Image (cartoon, rainbow, N blue to C red; front, side):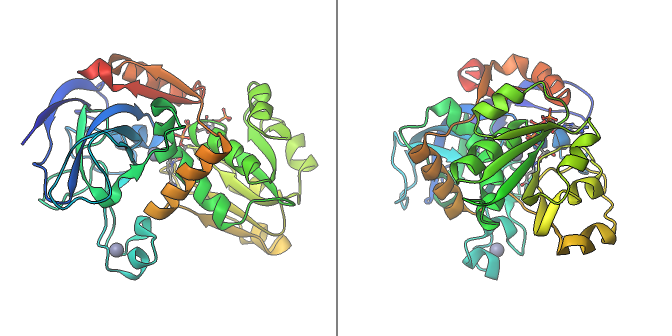
Length: 347
Ligand code: NAP
Ligand code: ZN
Ligand code: ZN
């Protein structure tokens, strides 16, 4: 089995450290990817800090992976050596259940195999993208269009698809008023994608500190949620609200911003519950929903959409040794707008 360089978490409280991990031998339908860049998602932080439950330490996280194919198994047909590919949040699913058959592998009824902390087909724990190489089944690798630079492509594999999928499902588009709550990694992609879909986009951020950026990303309006007047001015306004906040928020206050038949969809994943007053839903026949990443076909659709529209994440490229510092900045909402690890710094 190939042994490769990586960064791993060893406990919920210790900093991530350099280490080596083993990748499985190339199977007939596997491809080996030399990773070039890996994005830092807030889910990586929730995971390594044990906020979502038990963690199989030592664990290498990272599920926004892009790189180049360096080897292919004998039966591989979708990718060739030298191709630019990406891997997102899952590396397998049962492929047989109703949801897998519907192309919604993220909702596999037997549970999809997470890119990290999942149980691989050989029984080992999957290890993520803060690493020089990964071996994955060809069906779970995406084609990264040539026009998207490698480093900008990485965050699309989670932040991009996680916002694209609900925006597409709830039909963000011309004539629709869409609000994005929280303008971090997911949120800034939500703004860009919703604007490209033709929706009238409003950002709801803690302060007005990033207003110029939000308007440049395509938002028409920008409000501070720290100002109580925001919730009065915007009452009964939106068709769709996408909540990307990593911490608990007063969900009832945000539900009040939905117009008739509007939907608030949470993609943010704080470990704490978000208590909902049913009366917040009765008014305007509102819906409260959740959404998890997107299927493989939809992820490819999102990559192609971003390539066609010239949409790319705003990234701050860091060396592997700066990951712990980057985590602290993400936790302070001090991210503009996605940290991406230059994996050459791990070689
Ligand atoms: P991020 O870059 O840290 O962005 C979160 C943003 O939320 C911050 O930039 C900040 O925006 C706002 N925020 C943070 N703390 C807040 C607080 N206490 N009160 C109000 N607003 C706050 O994180 P991310 O990588 O985009 O991930 C966001 C969440 O989505 C995480 O919980 C992550 O686990 C989850 N996630 C879910 C899926 C899925 O499939 N559903 C996929 C990926 C990630 P402002 O500064 O603009 O206020
Ligand atoms: Zn993620
Ligand atoms: Zn399935």
